[in-house]
Length: 413
Ligand SMILES: Nc1nc(=O)c2c([nH]1)NC[C@@H]1CN(c3ccc(C(=O)N[C@@H](CCC(=O)O)C(=O)O)cc3)CN21
Ligand SMILES: CC(C)C(=O)C(=O)O
Image (cartoon, rainbow, N blue to C red; front, side, top):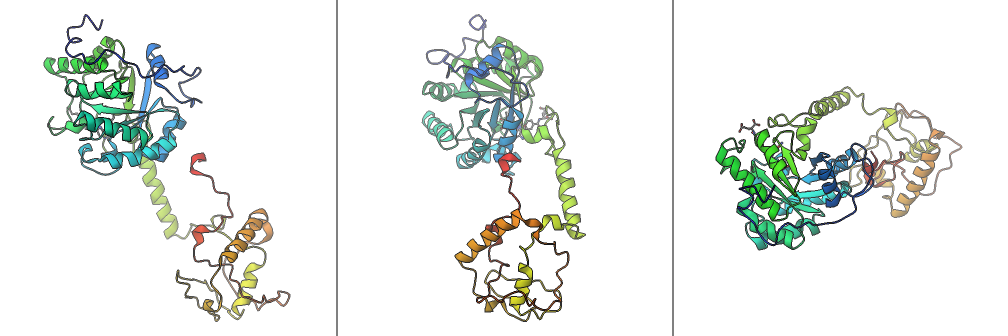
């Protein structure tokens, strides 16, 4: 089919079709549940051969990377849509290599099982040497498995070089967002016969240069189908290219309904934007109404430490007092004893505190929650006055102290 096609001969570079890998594809269910093994090019090829749609979603950071893995996507793509979706740039052309690598590293920490692809930013592949240097950076520093490059015949020598030296490359044809200025905007490509033929030629050229898959963006559905049917060795991943491509990709924010606007080819599979706004507004209301935090969301002192604490302060305060120590250790409370009288907490003090917190978390029932801080009692006679006053609280750095609630690591949430 390939050889007989009139456009298949337009560009042939290098020694022919190369494949990057011959892994044994993992067996078993790959449709919905997260697979236990790392996705390889071999696995992607098996999906393509069995006409199982290849699923691709973009990710830009650790949580979206985690989401892609947990949802069981085949390919996680750190697209340069990062520029617009996450960094607020006007276009993808403003994104730098360093920014891309920074985000790739975060995604890679969260998305370990899906095949991980990163876009080569605009300007990072203007020469073959630059392209190779930057592709290696994305793989070494960014931790990705493969790179994606926008363009067809025009960049074919670069693509052939990258695949020849062992860098898996994903092509990208049709609408090329990095060239939106040249295209006079983000416009559907290949509506006219000439341009459609040129896009088909791009696909064949990329196939010959050894790419492992080709993203086909914003082309008429029949053209997406035609390219998919006529490529012999490479799956297509469509975005706005109709239903017949070998797989589909969407920007995750678009798919989840985060953004206010999305291209016509997007379907919203979620309504995160609305939900997020609702949540943020509910929080603000609760704080303003003093409904948050509650006792369940607050910490209390161990045993009768509060009484000891008041006792050490002199115990003569008869009104509600919040002891407030600023970071320089100055006392701004209304109590009679100045906290300057206490020695500042030492490392030993922190360690002691850590012990107490542990006891506290085990025996948190020891103490009644104090719903109102009301100090009207005289010091309890049975409480022995310690030799050195030791404030349990406040501490100069609350965030570093041990928590009494178990903390769920983000990766388990
Ligand atoms: N959120 C988001 N989603 C994307 O799919 C995406 C990005 N950002 N940023 C990078 C590129 C830019 N993309 C775009 C941006 C705009 C259109 C757009 O305006 N399309 C018009 C087509 C107009 C026509 O030619 O008929 C549309 O109405 O869908 C398409 C793709 C795709 N990529
Ligand atoms: C939308 C996909 C294909 C992309 O290139 C990107 O996220 O930048």
